[in-house]
Length: 451
Image (cartoon, rainbow, N blue to C red):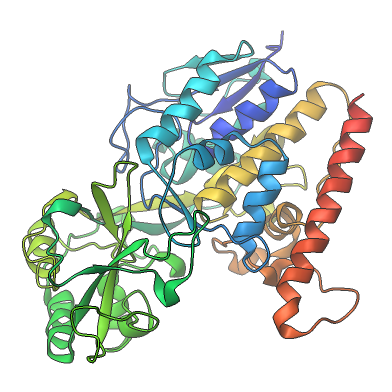
């Protein structure tokens, strides 16, 4: 006999969102999470939806940024992840950043309290049994080896992987504000009107030159033999890798000095600027933006304390690099996120080859809705490709070239062109407005069909 519940393997952002979408549609869910019974290389606790890298969900600007549009689309789909993020946001200019503990607490409590959700804390070893029936695998980039091997065998594909990196976190009270200052780039206001959401630390040319040299020469952690040759994701390169690509690469990347004025020396233009973003609701912790690294911990402390204002920095967490795993979705998955070779299995989250917290949760949202429709005997209607949800889904299932497939963030480049040309400055807003109109129509059709 087949279990009546839909099983979700993995309690990260995608798995938690998938379980929520199933439960809110009246489908019984068994959510499997191996932590804290078995940990991973990057997680520090056992909570559902724990954030292991940045605390930022990136831009929340609906009309000019594709990820901001994805935020809004997910809100309109009753996303638990977005509701938790909105409930525990911290100042971050125009971005949406969250307090890690508060965010994970809301997600976990909502699922624990839902009558349709059964949370089981144990590792799923190997392929989920056939008796489970419909199953969503949302184990993320840190999938346990036995399950990863089973997935690889069923899909007939070699495992694909890249390295992701974690930025260090600093105690705010250890920052020297006689050198550092609060300001958002170009004084742009965030959702709460704050124009000073970031801490800024300036470097002159000599300091920058010495810093880059130290990054390149600093002692780095070595890769395990099975990690050799695995490519980094271009959107999350370790800072020392960026430095090796060119002396000024960092000045045009995470350390760009534009749009900021040092109040301690307003007549002097900094050669480079390091920014820190609030990491918790209390405002006691700040992460160093773009400073993901594979430097050894001792080297990190020595090198990062060369930055003006961080000479006496105390680190709540140092940076690190871990291997992320993903499948070749364009070759292995159908349009409903099902494994072609074994349709009872769906995939969701970062393991599908999307990159980013929000994109991962979005695939969980869709997988949950698709599985719910199937469980109820209905048919699946994917979101229009003109929406952020639909564009991302189409990219990983049919749009990307399977022979060169790599992780991808949402971008307006994935959207179909407008029917009527728009001026360059108006194009993104036009794409966003079209997306929201089409999403509302899709949601209305789905609600009518469900009734």
